[in-house]
Length: 164
Image (cartoon, rainbow, N blue to C red; front, side, top):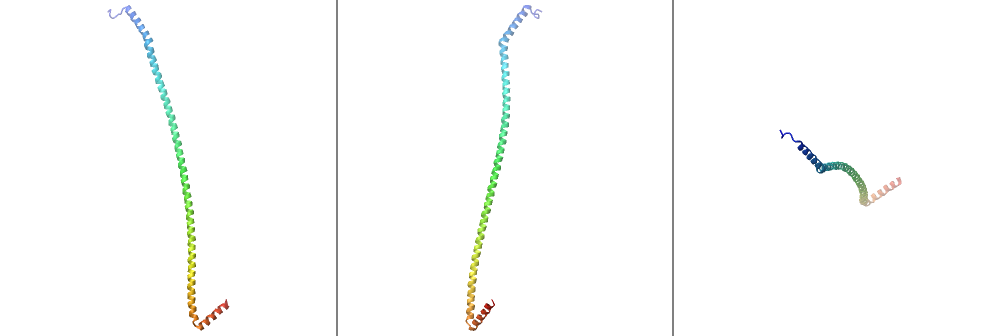
């Protein structure tokens, strides 16, 4: 049984060796290990803080981007409205100008037709008067050939003149 029960000197020596080992480890191994663990913990906390800041910055940038997109859409809509108004204005001006030009052309054509009508009437009157004179001349020649017909014509003309 001697193997199972240790001697007092051995227990004291092992206790002193354990305490000395504990002191040496706490001085040279645990402090650097704990410092490394603390440093690692601090770097993890810093990384988490930076990740949170990056997340906040991304949210801010996303919000800012959405605001810029909204402004760009509003500007685009405004530009489209202005372009439509300008287009409508140009179309209306062109329509008005075309109507004015059409009215001028119609008036010009009406005046031209009126002038041609007057010229045609003048030409017709000239031809009618020329034909009338020719017919009258032929009738008078036929009537003036005979002396009795001449006297009857003069008598009729005198009657008409006296009545009027």
